[in-house]
Image: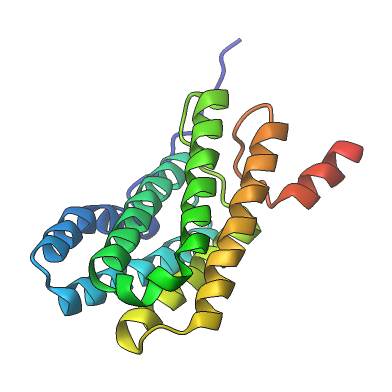
Length: 195
């Protein structure tokens, strides 16, 4: 019996956007080191917008691929690292009085990757609804932070929702037998387990 494996078309618009986001990582690093705050803010804002676009384009035009999900996850990690770098480099004076929540977010984020890697020997590429929503909100907060300035309630909403999203991701990772695409969240996972 011959098993047919469907070949993925990885040359598409969403994957190109993810690749561009990934390639922006070293440029952002150099801009940050050189202290070019405005250029850093423009490029990371563009990267955050492409993060919204690539997933929506992939879903709408049915261009989702396993390669694309992995590439998107890698690019997301790079942009998260650069966003945190930008906060520490350029905006720390405003964030410092509220840093406890950012530290909690970083701890939960790292813990989710450790658990995913420990359980599945790979970086967990889940795109839970809560994580996507908090990612969009965090991107909006970051753009506002660099263009307008620090807004405490938006910070607490964006970062607080991120903490909740990554706690949910940890709980999902602990329940899954393998990393699957299409997992919406803990509620849907528990509902499916009961069926």
